[in-house]
Image (cartoon, rainbow, N blue to C red; front, top):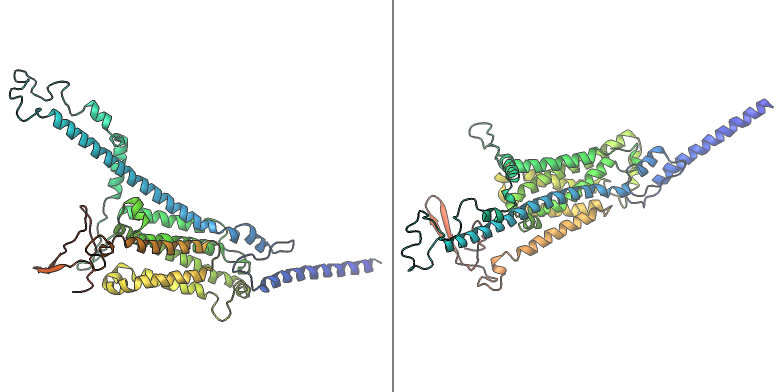
Length: 437
């Protein structure tokens, strides 16, 4: 009898182990047999027999909540934009207050600093007095009157003025150019303010990608690596800001008062950071499959309609134009082939945006940022119509433009004379196009 009980127990254990093995294999077969699942979305989970790695991928940093990483960059950018706009409007308002105060003082001084008329008071009331000052009545004017204190603004605070002076001393100082060898073009560095902003943005996105854990799942069959998703979502969220900073008419200049020519340096550096994030997004997809044989075959089943082309083809198609845009805009290449740069930069950016639509496939909130990019781009071109001289129907140049006289001057100089109805303010400039000579 003991032998019979041992045989039955052994067979029961074998049966249980076979059932558990069948359950695990069924779990993996189910992952492989669902070709209509969206990429990296809704991987079946979880039950008592689910692998620990799949449970971790669904609970620790789930795919459905990965849109928060894009929002992190949006919050960072909006905070920086609001702070810059507040500083601009603070300075603008104080300039208005100082101008009005100065005007009032000048008017008051004009009343008390001259006779009532040009023909009266030939012998002033102070003729026999030691008080040789105006006004004739009331207290004598001094350099530190109570009225001046009363009219002063918040900028009269010594602590605030010292703080502003320190900030300007630290961030407004140019960095000396660096010349490697005599005869070579010197290396010109951005301003300290630009370096500070770019460094803060770079530190934020890198820490936001690498600090949250985990960076990878146990197997790629459990979904895309979290590191790749974080970097990809932040890179997509950067697109509206990159395009906005490149436009001549943009809402950032309207809010901050900073001209587009000064914002263009941030456009370039954000594009370089976007390229870095795109590479961080790409590399984990090639590293993770090395850990497990057959993992890529399972991962491919999460893609829709991928038969006939490379599984990562849409990502490569988006990465190539981004690399091209960043490389051909490097200062040495841009200076040497500027006409080519101007011709192909915008078409290449349009190709990049189209490839991103294809690659993202409206997963999470990716298309929201791409549609925002399209909206900013279109709105900028629409607003520029109001800045063009020939689009104003109330001017003689409407639909035909202005006639210009070109005069050649010595030393390869040229003078262009354009009689126009356009008004301008000190410091303004215009772009001139000559479609015909």
